[in-house]
Image (cartoon, rainbow, N blue to C red; front, top):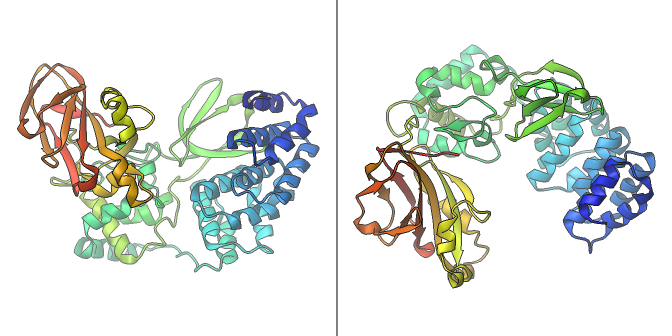
Amino acid sequence: MCIRDRRLAGAWKLHAFESEFQTKAGSVQSPRSARDAAIDALRSLGSGSSYEKLKALLANSDSASIRPQLAQAMAAMNLGDAIQPILGVLNQLTEEADLRATWETILRQKGSGPVVVKALREVPLTEIAAKSGMRVARETGKNLSELLLSLERAADLAPSEGEVGSVRIGQLAQAAFRRGNPDRGEAVYRRLELGCVMCHAIGGVGGQVGPDLTSIGASAPLDYLVESLLAPNDKIKEGYHSIIVETNDGEEYSGILVREDNSELVLRNTANQTVSIAKQNVANRIAGGSLMPAGLIDGLEEGDQLDLFRFLSELGKQGRFDAARGNVARRWRLRAGRHTDEQFGIDRIIADPSGNQWRPAMTLVDGRLMQDTMREALNLRNINQVTSLIGLFSATQLQVARKGLVTLRFTAPKDTRLWIDGEPRDFADLSRVELEAGVHDIVLKLNPRTLPESIRVECDEGTFLVK
C-alpha cells in the first residue's frame, strides 16, 4: 500500500489495515515518509485498538526519528492516558522543531493544561523541554499561568519575573537610550530562539504574525517599546488580537484571523503558517491575547535587552536603520554551486534562481548580506568540501517602472561574476545599465574560498522585491 493509500485508509476508517499500519510504522527499514504515513493512519482511525498499537510502538521503539510522531499521535487520541510517556519522549528530545511540534499537539487538546500540570507533579523535565513548553504555552494567547509555574518547577528553573511597573519601564528605557547599542540589538533581534523575524517584518522582509516594525522607532517612544516587549498583552496593536478556536474533535488553535467566510476560518499562527479550520468543525471561539509570549526576553542578559530596545527605537529614523525605501536588496536567494553543476553548465543555475536548491536569506536592515548567512548556505560539514565548490550564487530581483538607464551600486569583491536576466555582464566595469520596464533577475557568483564580510546592492531607479 502506497503512502497516499495509507492516509486514505486511515481517513476512511478501514480498521482491517490496523496491523499493517503498525508493522510499517515500526519498521526501521521503511522510509521515514512511509512510517509517518502509517502513524498518521493509525491516528486517523481513532479507535482504542489503534491507540494501543501506537502505545506499543512507543514502548518498544528507540528510534529518535519516529518517537516524536508517535507521541504527537497519542496526544491527539488520548492525552490523559498518554501524558506520562509523552513527557518521557520530551525529555529525550533536543531539536526545537520536534519539541515545539509535540508541545503544540499537546496544548491543542481541550483541557490539556490541568492534565499536564498533574503529570508534572511526578515527572521532572529537562531544561530544554520545559523552556520549549513555556514558549509554546505563552504563544497560545490563553491564560496558562498554572502550567507555566509547573513547567518552571519541573525543570527547577528560576521563577519568571512578575509584573513590571511604570517606574521600572522608565528606568529600562533610559538605560537603553544611554547604553544600548542598536547594531548589537539587531543581532539579538535575529536570534532564532526569539522568533522575532518569524513574526515581524522590517522593510517587507519577515513574518506577518505581528505588526510591521519598519518605522516603529519613529512612531513610538522608547518606553512604549520596552513595555510592549515586557507586557505584550497590555500593548496589543489593533488587528493583532488573537482568537482561540475549539474544534468538535477536541483540539484548540490560536492565531490572528486572516479571513473568514461561510465555510472556513483561516488563522495565522506563531510559526507564520496559515491554518484553515472548517466552520462545521468549530465548537467555540473566544478572544485571546497577544500571540507574542509574555516573558519572551526574560532569559536575555540585561545588556542584550537594552541593545534590543535601542535597535527597535532606531527603526524608521533617518540613517542606517531606515528600511522604508525599497532601493536596497533585503531579500536574497542563495545556492551553493559544485563541480557537478559545472559539468552540466552553470547556465541552468542562472536560468532558474528560484528552484528548490535555492534558499531564502535576509540581510540586515541596512541591506548587508553577512558572511555568516552566506556560509550557512554553503552547508559545509568539513573543510574538505570547499574543494568541491565552484561558487556561491546569490540572486535578488529588481523591479523597474519604466525603460531606461539604471545605476546599480554593488558592494562585493572585484572577482564577482554578474548576470542580469541570464545574460553575463562585466561586473568590474558596470555602472549604468539599460533595462526594460518590469522585473529583472540579478545573480552574483562569489568565490566560496574568499567570501567577503558582506555584500550589498542598491539602485535608486528601481525597487527590490521582498517576496
